[in-house]
Length: 154
Ligand SMILES: [Zn+2]
Image 1: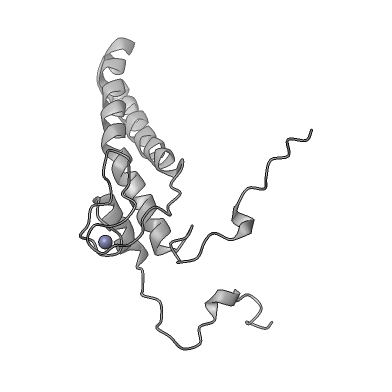
Image 2: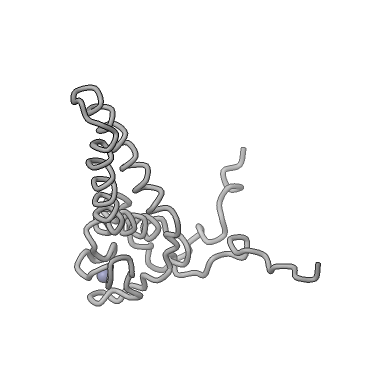
């Protein structure tokens, strides 16, 4: 099979500078710690979950991300495992009432959710930046990525 067939047109570079490397693990780590995935210096968030439009240090545009529901999904996945495992462990080892279990695990779930949400979103933004998704490549999203116009005629 011809290996030219699965190349996209913009993979072909003739002259010019090679694109700068974007290591995925480093970019995610910088995002998790509230740092710009490009320079690692500027802050990524201006509020609890409000990301900056542009890095204050290197000027990288950071408003291309589409983190959407992925950060909450990650948080639910992680905390679900912690809380269910913790509940089962305390159920087996301690004699607590249902109210006692709720008094432990509901606050744990709420506090961990609040602690993990911003790092999860930062990690997702770092991942999307590293993979050059959603305009982080310097090009707008392809039309195939966009929703078709809604047909209100019916
Ligand atoms: Zn930066």
